Each structure stands twice: as C-alpha cells, then as structure tokens.
Length: 270
Image 1 (cartoon, rainbow, N blue to C red):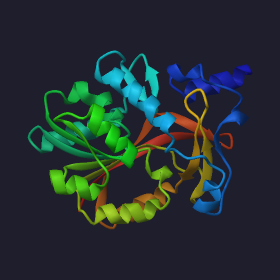
Image 2 (cartoon, rainbow, N blue to C red; image 1 turned 60 degrees about the horizontal axis):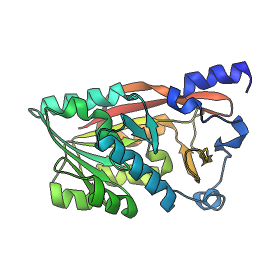
Image 3 (spheres, rainbow, N blue to C red; image 1 turned 135 degrees about the vertical axis):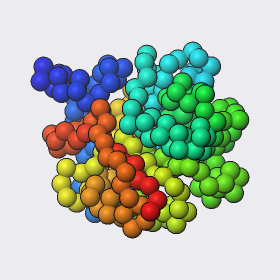
Image 4 (cartoon, rainbow, N blue to C red; image 1 turned 90 degrees about the horizontal axis):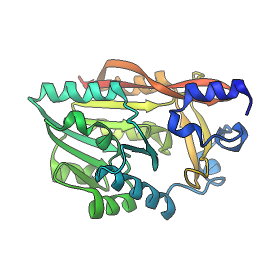
C-alpha cells in the first residue's frame, strides 16, 4: 500500500481496523445499480450464521468486561464514541427527569448500548433493540437484561414497552430496501425524538445504490447499500419533525475517491 493511501486510511478508519486493510479494489462500496433486486443478485447477504456468531462472541466479551468495545463483530481496545449521539441521549434523558426509553432500530446485539452504558449507568434506561429474528433470538437468549431487550419489530416493542422517548437509527437507513417508506412508517408512531447517527450520504444530490463488500477478515458478506440524498431525507422528516441539530461524526469512508464523512441529525416532533 503506498504512503498516500495509508495516510487516507488513517483519516477514515479507527486504529483497530487499520490492520485489516487490503488494496482498495478488494472491498468497499461499488457500483450504481438501478434496483434493489439487481444489487441483491450480486450479494450473499447479512443473515449468514457465521456473522451472528462472531457478533455474539464479541458482544458477550464486552458484556462480561473481557473487552472494551465491539462494532460489526470487531473488538476495539478503546471505545469509539459518537459524541453527538451521546449528547442527544443525555439531552432527552434530562428532559424526562433522568428517564430514557430508546428503540435502537438495527442495533445488532446492543452495540450502541454497550458503547454508551458508562454514561447511562445512573439513568433509568430502557434500551430496546429491533433487529432480524436471528439476532433477536440470540439477544434474548444470551444478552438481554432488565435494561437491554430485543424485539423483532417496532410494533412489538411498542406493545411490550409503550411509546419510547426516542428512536435511534445508527447507520441503518442505507441497508433498508425502501428507506423513505420506512421513515414514513415510523413517523406515524409520533415518537418524540428521532436520531439518525453515523450515516454516510451521497456526495451528489441524488440517491445512489451500491454494493458493499466486507473485508473477509471481518466476516464474509456483501449487501446492497444506499448513499441517500441528505436533503431529501431532511425534507421527508420535515413533514412531522423539526431538525433540532445536525452534526458530523469523526469517521468516514471513501466512494469513487470522494471522502464521505458520516453525519447525523436529531429531529423533534412538531
């Protein structure tokens, strides 16, 4: 790897992942597909058992205190905080007298909860992850406790836990087949606060559908991934929400040699 590429990698990735780097053509985000079906036909998906097993093992190490932090099954020596997300969590908790009920949509086995639990430890927290059925079953059997629980749908979480204070969507919108329809559906619930966190948006004023190929040293997987139009997402949310804050995350990725910094927003119900 040449020096300029190494320097770019240092700006895009946390230190614990630098050792996984291979030539840029080997993995990452590629293509510009016309439909989800077309992109999916070139992928092997995210539901493979080996992925769940790796995430489970890493999460259990964090839960038991044997590891510091996990993201996408990778163990880190230090926590890579999304400080803007944590600020949103603390602000909403402050508004609710130290109580915080969260639906974490696409939250794996509770990665964001464990990431922030040190700061949430003195709050009355109910963290509800909504995920695929295999992850939910694993979470219920091995991970959940009285603060962290797992559900197969937002509706199921509502029926069991009631209306939450906020919905967190952390780097999940790009992996939904119909992200705008999803936003329309969740807005009908009128959750008081919505957070979109750590999400890459397109560098052009349009939506673009790519395929993400994961470095096999993390796990074997590839799946469709949107780079959405940020202004279009804000416009959709503005039908029921006001944008309370917008922010940039520290991390980013590269698409067509363009640096795309992760970003997010906090929206409040009008």
